[in-house]
Image (cartoon, rainbow, N blue to C red; front, side, top):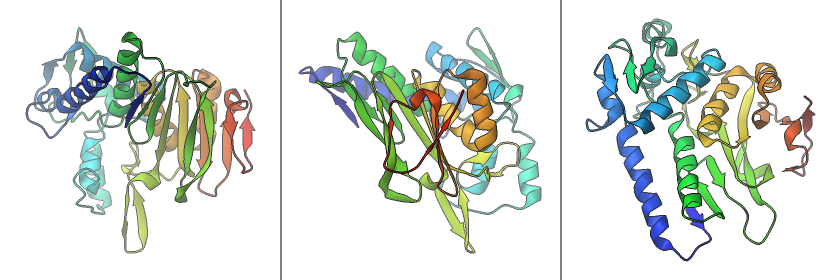
Length: 293
């Protein structure tokens, strides 16, 4: 959903075209996409745009010690999270799939990406964040400064129209018809990752779609939802997944070491933790704790 306070509808139409163009280039299953070429070759020359996304993704992988990994595709395929043919694999099947999961085997220089042929790259965990950031920048360049871009869990807002801030709600991971609260923001990306967004149930067990790259199994970190508030949508998208995989303690430690973003973390027992930089902008009628610097 794209909302902008302007009388120039052509700009919005052009923004929609940009979204569709990026989507086409990053689809792993499309034989015409750049990513399809990447996954069928050891070396591939990328456009500046795709190279930037890959470089950013690899950097997040390195900074988070692999909690975010763009080579997770074989494991996701195994569980059926991509094609919706859900399946609970055996430990041996997972172990076999994990042989090809390692972001450090991928490198990029002068827009040329290099990797073992069997390694598969998927940018689905970071592409939405990039798209919202790109569209926001495009609107700004066309003198549109008040807008809301909502790509399903990935929100980018400009300056609020006739008020100080936008109010962006954070969904209750235990009841998707409710909100636990929200943040008052301007010129920010607000990105949420939660296991509740995609999952399947087999023999009474729930399997969520955020997979730990180290175990090859759905993350059991003790978190139900992670919301990142940042200037850069692409980094927020990757970090929301990485911090979810890390769990509360490691995510808190990571934030204290970096502090170039803010976060709202919700545990599986419903406790809410908000980083110090949001103490004046987070709002809720529920109890929550502030994570101090």
